[in-house]
Image 1 (spheres, rainbow, N blue to C red):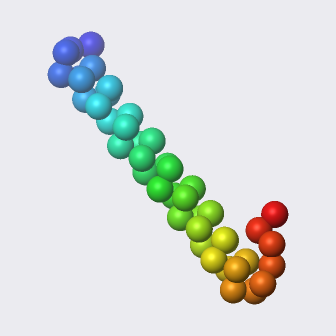
Image 2 (image 1 turned 180 degrees about the horizontal axis):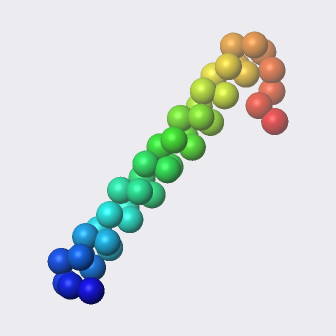
Length: 43
């Protein structure tokens, strides 16, 4: 594996992790806001 390919591989992981965290957080906050509007508990 070339140095460039390895560098790209290592540097892309933070972007993938950030995207997954964003999707999970967005879903959580949508559910939380909906529960709050309906006067329900989240858990």
